[in-house]
Each structure stands twice: as C-alpha cells, then as structure tokens.
Length: 442
Ligand code: ADP
Image 1 (cartoon, rainbow, N blue to C red):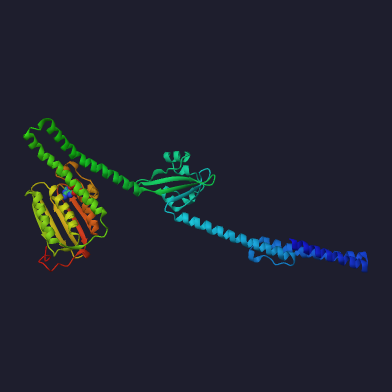
Image 2 (cartoon, helix red, strand yellow):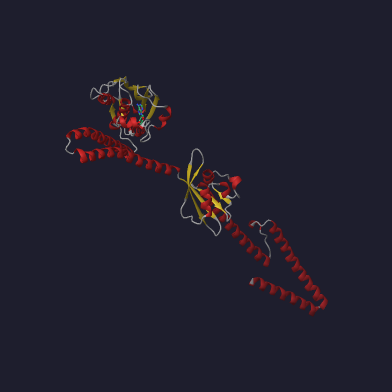
C-alpha cells in the first residue's frame, strides 16, 4: 500500500513537473496538453488492467491470474496468493469432509443426521439397513413419519437421551436395536443405532438356562425336602417308612447328580480350547465299552446289536467321543420300549466315517428334530425325567461333534424309531496302531 502511494506521488510529481516545464518553456496550453496526454495514458493503463481483472473474474482460476505492470503487478500478485491459499484451504476442507463421510459410511453402527425439526439430512448405509430407510427417498423427510413405533416417538419427544432406547424392527427375523440420540450444534442431532440382536439372544439363552437349571434342581430338592420333613414329623422311629422313602430319595439325589455332571461336562466343553487335542482312538475298544454300557442300561429289555465292518481307528478325543456316543446309546435305550432293538453301527464309506445308533423306539415328530440339541429341550418332559434324562445329552453331543468337525444327522419317525449318526470327514481316519492287536477290525 505504502509502495502504491509512493509510486502515485512520484508519478504525480513527474506530471506536474512536466506541465510546469512546458508552461515555462512554451505556453499554458502546451502544458495542459502535455498533462492531459499523461493523464489519458494513465487512464488507459488502468482501464487495460481493470479489463484484465474483469476477464479473469469470470473464471477465477489461481493459475490464470493476469500479470500486470507497476502497482497492478502488486495487486495481481496479492490476488494470486489469496486465491491460491483459499483454494488450498477449500481442498483441505473438502478432504476432511470426504474423510468424515467415508468414516461415517464405513461405521458398523447406523448414523442419521437430523436437523432442528428432526428431518433427515444424511444417513449412512448401516442406518438404512437397521431402520429400513431409503437414502434417496427419505432424506428431507421427518424421521418420526418413517419410524412409527410409539416408544420411539416418546423417546424423541422426551428430553433424556443419556440412556439408549431398545427397539425391535422387522418381521419375522426380528432385529433388536439400541438407539441413542446425541444432540450436537445448537439444533442438530445424531441418531445412532446399534444391532444388539445377538447380545439379546445370548442374554435370553443365559436367562433361560439359569431358570431351567433352577427349575431342574428345585424339583428333586422339593421331593427330598418333603420326605425328610415327613420322616422328621412322623416317622423318625418308623423304620418301615424310612425304608419306603429311602429309594425315592436316592433316586432324586441321583437325578441331581446326573444333572450336575452334565452341566459340568457342558461347561468343560464350552471352556476347553477350540483346538481339540487329537489322539488315535481305538473304535473297537470304544464300541465294546458302549455295548457293555447299553446292555447294562437295558437290563435285558432290548436286543442290542453291533455292526462294525471296517478297521476302526479315528483321530479324536477318546473321552469326548465316549461321552457323545454314550449319550446317543443311552437315549436309544431309554426311548425304546421293552422288546425293541438298538443297533450300533460303525462304517467307513471312503469319503466319510460314520457312527450311528438306531432304535425301534418311540421316534420323534419331525417339527422337534431341529431343536433337539438345545439345552433342556425335550419332546416329552415327563417321559425324559421319568427315564432319568437331564435334557442336556444332545447339547453335549452337539458340542463334541462340532469340536471334531463332524456333523450330527437325525432321522426319525414317530412310533417307528430313530437313527442318530455322527459323520466324520475321511481326514479323521487314523492308521491302526500296530503295537497291539487293536485296530485290525472293529
Ligand atoms: P434327555 O436327557 O431328555 O434324553 P437329550 O438332550 O439327550 O435329553 O435329548 C433331548 C430330547 O430328544 C429327549 O428329551 C427326547 O425327547 C428326544 N430324544 C433323544 N433321543 C431320542 C431317541 N433315540 N428316541 C426318541 N426321542 C429321543
């Protein structure tokens, strides 16, 4: 600026001196003409630069800022610097905004930006999925018109947003969302949504599990407590009554013991490392043991048959396989009326190895089959309890089968019988251990 004033003063002094020179040397008219020529030249100079500036302003690109002379050079340089720094800040801001939008788009939670009237300004894809919104159609619409649940309206109209709202969305595969409103700026709000379906499911399973265990334990405890009270009140000196009650009390205590044992087995399985410590399991030994156990359970009431056709060594955990197969055999015996038969089969089909237990028992209606491996799921509660079942056997089988990367197949027909098969991949086939006689054939 100071430079500009100095240049102008110098220029005006020079013109004045020129005018005075002409006046002294010639006449006042010549002096006026000389000064007018100088002023006209200056005006043309400035008009030319103004024209350059106007032309540039139509397309204000920093790289095309015109070049000028004298003071205009300084003006154009300053303009260039300012425009360039503005363009750079704009570019930086655009980058930051883009990064924010990208981060919002990639977030695993839903985000909706609302204006002061709760109209949607922006939403990310997760919000679209969670709240079944449409990015094109719903931007600019009132959120309350799109989500019509009364609890959501009450939450949005309230003034306490410190706690999230739990909402259920969609039928039939219901999604449970945790929704929270976060006001920001003075007027805008963020609506955050998180899918907690899985968490809710785990909590429900946990609650049901505790309720089931309590219920299962309460029944035998009540029975034992009742007997003890009766003996205490009436029959402490009555050996006949004690003799009559004792077996029933022992039966109830056995029931509790089996339940606790099954619970411990389940808990051990759930807490054991995912990677199974595999060993070579001699299926012949295992099948023999299972046969002895089946005979023991059946007490001669059933025909028990073993069909094993192949060399039988398997990579797996012997105690776990014993537990899984034992549960299947025990079920087959327990759910087969007297006179029926239970068949244990071991076969090597080349690409798979199969252990199956089939029976000619009561069978299972088709609709129950998918749920059999849930903890405490029983087709007939009374029958299961009556034959000493805990409702945990097939849950244990499911865990063990999964730990062996095998699969459990169930086929059954009411009143005809059931077949439970555990199918192993051929990679579980182990070479016979040649040290002993074991492993030649099962
Ligand atoms: P439980 O201790 O009650 O036998 P399980 O988990 O072993 O519990 O089995 C779950 C349910 O599956 C049983 O209550 C029974 O209704 C049904 N079930 C299992 N195996 C058989 C079978 N071989 N025949 C008929 N029903 C069976």
